[in-house]
Length: 470
Image (cartoon, one colour):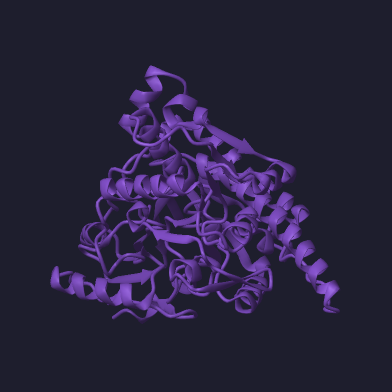
């Protein structure tokens, strides 16, 4: 058995790990890398292996940095099954269609600007037609039910508590008379987040691949994040401005809306217009209605007292679908809250909203999630005086508020508990999906916890082979 780390290695985005076993090649995730534009374009277009070699993909969840490069895989010849939970398969269809649409639209927009400057046009990474080739390959499987993914390889999904349908996976592998247990965490969620069930601790494994995004610190209190959100909205309302929230369409948007519902119901903020300006977020919100099996007890109780729209706050929201509806928001000057994808402000309608709002001191840009280096979202989170949007420099005058407590990733305390449980008898623990500072801090903490397995932070291209074990 060989494990090759090709994505989310020494970084957070672009999750992709290659497993070669019994003559079969499997992928754990196939995500888009997000970072410097030129580097991201090259890495996403150039897969680390021939697509036809891949027998199957096992998908942890439907965030773009985990599923977003599946169309490139299919475009280059992959025809095998893509295993995912039922909710993940449902959401992935929406995510990929939206991703292709955004890439096509942005390519047209930039090409038009380039033509005005005498520069060549640009093309999308993949098209809507490429996405349609992926959809028949999505193969839904239930939580906690083993299924075969390849000869000698059985997989079981367990609750990750990160977004709707997210899962960690246990792979039970028989090869050359030996049996191995491999756990891949995917993205590990937090306990007590609204709507979703809490993450499950992993089964004990011989090899544990786990995320380390917040390995260097525990999270701030969720209620403190709630108060910071409320206060930022009130400040902006008193200035007569707009609150623009670059928000992941899956998970974060629904959680923020849920909190806004509670603030309005309890009279903590005025009943402002709440606009979810993202066809993807609109579609995902509909998927949330279809999968109450993923809800926690609090959400289920709210649902039992009313309909899903009221329980989740969707009855207070205006969902926009058309470009015309989105553009019309820029002509409005009344206070409002706009949630729009993407979460790192690297594409989609939120980029246009930022272009139209960051120059006005009345407005607020609200950052509610981790931002990858070199993204527009990171530059805003760092409160840069000016930012480049669609190739043009814009002075930032809007207030920027960063609220870290809303993260749907586990903080250091739960990561330590996760590693102690899954790695109690492990031969190796691999930290992925984290920057170097976070991974180093988590490694130090796990050593202090007495974890006996060696803990490593593999670089991109690192290969681990069980044949090398003594």
